[in-house]
Image (cartoon, rainbow, N blue to C red; front, side):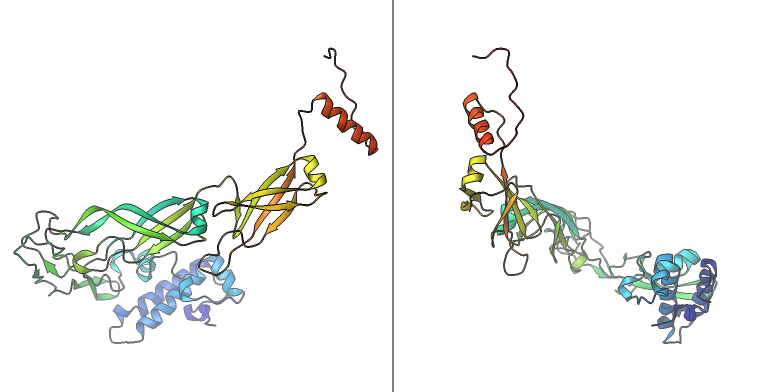
Length: 359
C-alpha cells in the first residue's frame, strides 16, 4: 500500500492545513507543464493528487489509516478531475491540458415510463417519445446549405484545439484549449443551413421502442446506448436512460422476487377446511387447499408463482397469507348457535347485552 503521508512529505499527525500546504508546494514543483521534458511528471503529479484526495477528506483519511486501499475509481469524486483540484488552489490560470477539441458527442436523454406488475412479470415493449437533437434533414447533418461544404478551420488546421501560452506562478505555460474560431469542431461553415443555422441538428420529437425485460423492479434504470441525442457533425450520439416505475397491484405485495397475497376465510372454513382460488400474476387463478384447523395468519407457499428473476433463470414463490374473518353482524339465531358452541367448549364469552325492546 502506498504511503500517502510519505508522498506528501508530512507526518501522520499532520493537520488539514499542513496537508494542504504540502500539496500546494508539490503541485507547483511536479505539474507536467512545469516539467515539459520529464515523461514521469504526469505520473508523479497524479500520485500527489491522489494522496491529497485521500488525506484531505477526514472520512477517507480515517479509512486509509485503518488500512483500507483505495482504487482509482474511488477517488476524485469531489472534483471533476485534476483540473478542478488545481482550480481550488490556484484559480483558473492553472490548467492540466484542457479540451482537445473536435465535434461534441450527443447529449444523454432521460425518460420515464410506468408499467403494471403483471407487465413487469412478463416483460413488455413500450414506445416512448422524447425531445432530443436529431439530424437536420435539409443539410443531412453537415450544417451547410445544400450545394455548399464546410471548410477546414484555418486557425487550428482542423484539429479543433490550439495551444495557448500564458504567464503563471510557474513561469510561461503552454496549454491546449478549444479553438475559439471553430468552437472545437475543426471546420467553418460559410453558408449555414437555413433550417438548423449551421448546427447540423435540430431539436425534435424522437420515438423509441423500449423492451423492458421480465423481472424489473420499481426504479430500474435501463440504458439504451447510442439512442440519445445526435452528436455534432458525425460525433457519437448520446444514450437514453429510461427509469421504469412499476405500479402497485392491489392483489400482491412484492418483496424482491417473492409475491405475497392475502386471502380471508370464515370461522367455519378455518375449522373444517376449504379450497380457495388464488390469483396468479400472469393471469388466471389456481386453487389451494386450506386444511381443517388452520390458524389465522397461516402462510401457504406456491412454488415458482412469484416474479421472474431479472436476467436469470427461475422465478420466486407466491406466499398466501390466510386471515380468518370474525363476524360482527350475527343475527339472533347465529348468536345463539355460537354461544351454545362456546358453552360446549367451556369458553366464557361476554354475556349478551340486554335489549330494551326485542321483537
